[in-house]
Length: 84
Image (cartoon, rainbow, N blue to C red; front, side, top):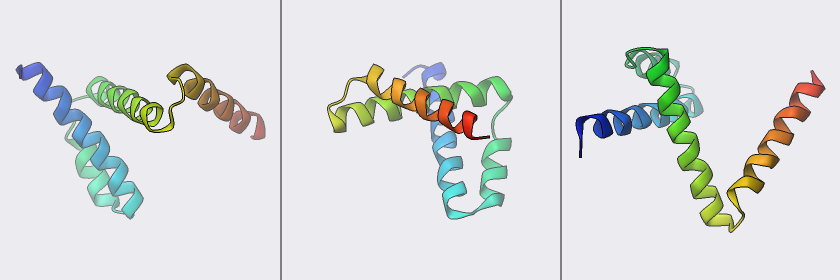
């Protein structure tokens, strides 16, 4: 594994850790993991890759095509925006 790939995977692990800590209500953990990123771009990239992985897993487990899942998410986001 290249150093760049290892860094990307570590970032994804931190991103998943942030989600888990939020779910537990561990705000100190969220803060610590968030601060472990070197900058906003690294954090955004980690969450982008994590999102892509989560969508692929969802597609695999449901048998639904990824574009269908993405479209449904987009429509739900639009509905939330319209509700505000």
